[in-house]
Length: 113
Image (cartoon, rainbow, N blue to C red):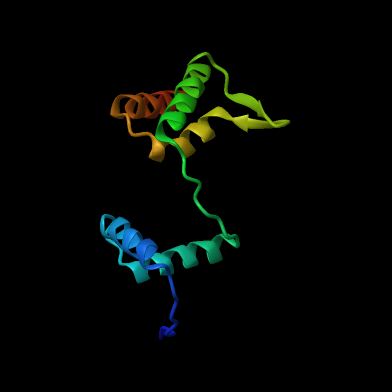
């Protein structure tokens, strides 16, 4: 498929910081935008990542892990029943602590067995 040429304007500092970020992932600036747009179109939604504090994510993961080990698979979040394993799976990529990450993975595997 032929690609359309479009030009965008960004604050120079933002562009430079983004370029550095993207260079660590194997994407180019253009390919990262293309991938973002493709995923939004597939999901039929425009979703922006929230900056999560790694420490907060890991605290949440530890609490959820404790609940799951205690056979609590569901919890109430704002009046909705939420799956503990699903929430842990969503948090997994954001967990930096290798020991915690391995423990979450092991527990999730055991839970599904």
